[in-house]
Image (cartoon, rainbow, N blue to C red; front, side, top):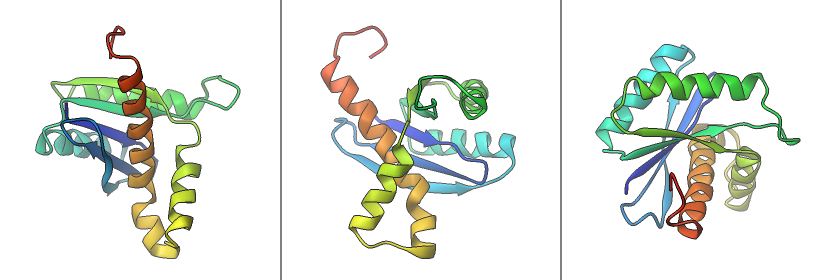
Length: 144
């Protein structure tokens, strides 16, 4: 199944996709859009263009497990996205995804402006990779 992951941000929103066999999560692109509604429309358009069969939206749950304003905004993003696409949209815990993506950027010595251009898409790939690992290990569970 082709799955798209979204790392929503107020200025930049990263997208990632996996292959049909759900083995490889790859950064797709970064949408540079500050307008909430236009960003949602752009994500919906990319989901259609890339023939996503499922969309995973990162949910920035606090480290103590609580849901703060950022999580609420991402849930609203997912809710509005559901109205624009014909595929299922699920929320997925994204704690530390950006930190992990920064670690990857450091490993490949990507710094400065080049890092900023790809960081959000890389974070979306980290979210998707986590989701794919869960799916692989929980086949048959409801919703997977």
